[in-house]
Amino acid sequence: MDIPLKKGEVLNDRYEVKTVIGTGSYGIVYLCTDLKMNENIVIKQLRKSKRRSKKELRQFENEISILRMLNHKNIPKFHEKFSHDGNVYFVMDFIEGDNLEDHIFLNQLTFNEKESLFFLDELAGLVSYLHDHDICHQDLRIPNILLKNHQPILIDFGLSIMINSADLAKDSILQLKRQDFYDLGEILLYVLYTTYASKSKKALPWTEELSLEKETVHILKRLLSIQEPYSDIKEISMDLQAALKLKKLN
Image 1 (tube, rainbow, N blue to C red):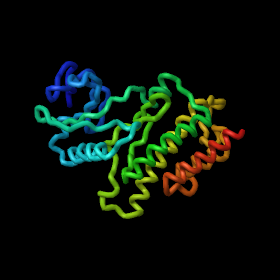
Image 2 (image 1 turned 180 degrees about the vertical axis):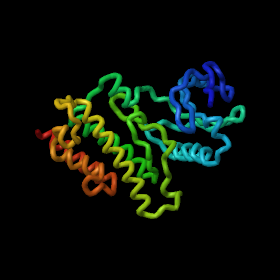
Image 3 (image 1 turned 120 degrees about the horizontal axis):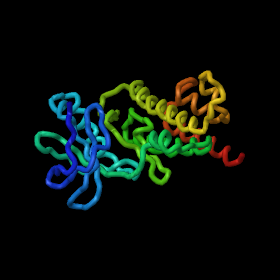
Image 4 (image 1 turned 90 degrees about the vertical axis):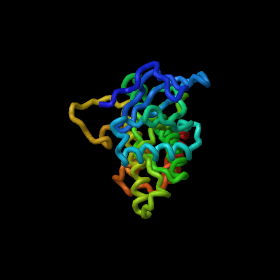
């Protein structure tokens, strides 16, 4: 059992723990105060039980390496890595905002079809940025997307893969990218269902439950590999732009 740090503990003579804001399979995430800068930051700790696991340590270091490479306003910025009492940590930006899961299920946030497509277009822009840097996120889920000023913020790169350093064949790289595309399809379905009111006691497939424009159905079917899956994020963006353009005309 990994006991989280207590409120008020100070790490590295600089970061005061305020609260736990997340727990994962190999890490614990804290909201802290940077006593030097007098601002909130986020610190991720490798679980004590994982410190001797080469696999988990490698995963932790991999997340650090990926965050070091990224410089995007919608992705938390990496600050530093440090050790304290035998534990390893890294520091990154705190970006205020609820995650998409809480917005949907607790705050009853809804998206109509046009808003859903626009949101996915914004998110696809972030995935495009990652793929341009040879990074596949591999964990695109609604808990890993924050909303700030209606903009998606992408967090948690713990399962991400740097495809340029993994000595992967082209087919393997394509499958990794398509996993990100499939996850985008799942997210699009989630947000589309926020305005769905069931009229039947029987659960039906989304193709029957949701009343969508054919362009949206086409995008979903390709994202979810029901039809020929996308091979490049730019194809997705082009289809989304075309669908949004038609929405503006209607």
